[in-house]
Amino acid sequence: MTAPNPGGRKVGRAINRAALVLAVALLVAIGSLWWRDRTRLRETPRWDAAHAVALRAADAGERERWIVAVNPECSHCRDRLAHLAAALARRPQGPALGVLLVDVPRRPDSLAAAAALPAGVWWDSAATWRTRWRRSAYGEVLVFSPGGSLRRVLPPDSPVAVR
Image (cartoon, rainbow, N blue to C red):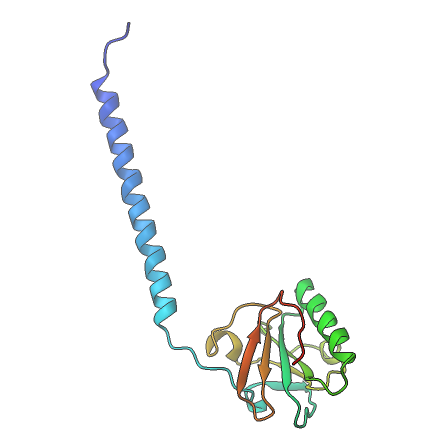
């Protein structure tokens, strides 16, 4: 039989205390970040062509404008855009589809603006989508009225339901 090791207990207690302090500090840090995010003011999105650079401007007229947040490097974004374009093409009087290229630090080349979309292709050069509107989900659809006010936001994986 081995004799008790009082020194081992002290080491074990010190490790437990350090782990507890680390866990509490991590919880406080995460809570602080969450609180900061939730208390920052968010600007309600409003479609104003002056907030983005037109790579391929278009006029949606009096139709509802569906603007998809796309990062050109994201394959999911490209798939989502293709799916939306195909679904809306079957409804010629439906909403006008457009693209807002987000999280792109430099002006995209002309290939990025080659798509023929009724609401145009726009580059978010001032990062309005992320910083002022506080959006972060690539592939989401911001649905704007003909006057530019936000009607609703469709999540990236939501089915296409044209009203």
